[in-house]
Image (tube, rainbow, N blue to C red; front, top):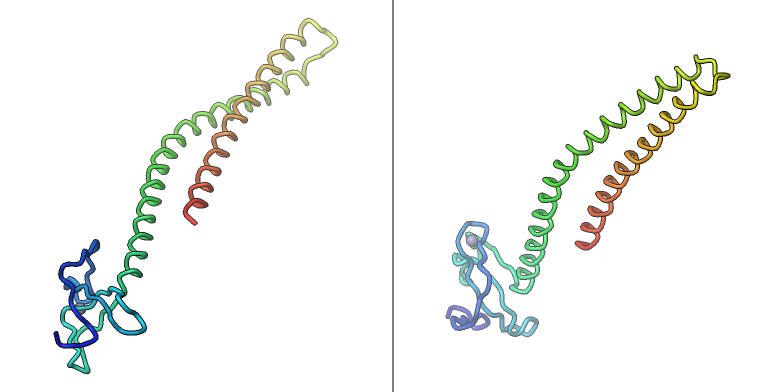
Amino acid sequence: MSSRRIRQHPGENVTILVKCKCGYLAINRTSHTPGNPNRKFFRCRKWNPKQSENPCDFFVWQDIQVAIEKKKQKYKVLISGLKMDNTRFREENFSLSKWNNELQELLAQLLVGNLQLENKNCTEQDLCTPMKEELDMIRARLGFVESVVLGLMLQRVIHVHLQLQSFV
Ligand SMILES: [Zn+2]
């Protein structure tokens, strides 16, 4: 071994593979310095303690690298979850646009009905009552469609919020 302070432990388990900046697979060693006794690290295989200027100065403690990998894994899970959400939201958008079309139609019917009612002479109860009833039905349907659309939007907001919250 070229350095007294850094010894190789080939038998020790290395669960992660680390590539250094220059593209080589980094080597795994254990530090025996007083400041970091038995702490594992990765270092470029080109690094040479005898040289003051090294071609690659890549160095990372194994515990820090493991923490980074764990974080990366968490991000991957989050991203794949968000991608799935995106697909689902696209499908939901399709049904939302159908609901929206119905909303627009109902609103148009309501406007026309209101205008007709205003133009009629409503002293004749027999004529106006069925028209009012029809308008009430349209209003009820409108309320239902609005609540469905709002419910879907709210579900979405809560779902995304919870996902992001669980990540932080
Ligand atoms: Zn390197």
